[in-house]
Image (cartoon, rainbow, N blue to C red; front, side):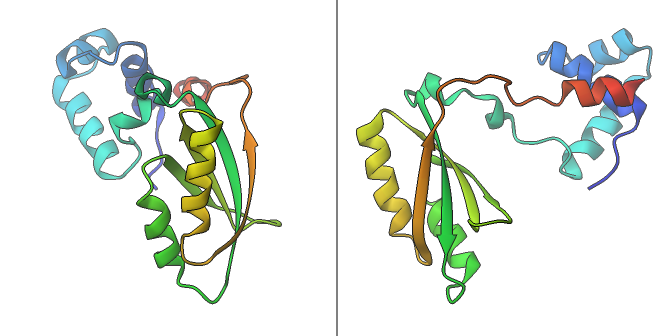
Length: 156
């Protein structure tokens, strides 16, 4: 993963404040050359520092108002790739992270309601290698996922 420097951070903060900004508008606002902004945004995308735009979509707008986290215990005999592929095939499993501690994986899951969450849990448990799942339902988004404070710190 490449390092984001102060100029990159300023560009990303400006884009965060106005996601519809054109490259030219960003350049003007930040006092940079248009080509500089364009090249840096392209590099950040190519290097994976900028995630997919779909990450910004609120699952609630898609009718999935229930957010849950599942800790999964996975058999060490199964292929991790097969487990990951099976979990990725479940649309409501929106993120899976490998973790340390008692569980092997942490899955972020969205559902319509608890009955739908039960259906999704059955799908997750049917994935190759998944032995156990423990589910916690999120009650409130107390501090939403954010990176802007880190960008402000880097931007100086």
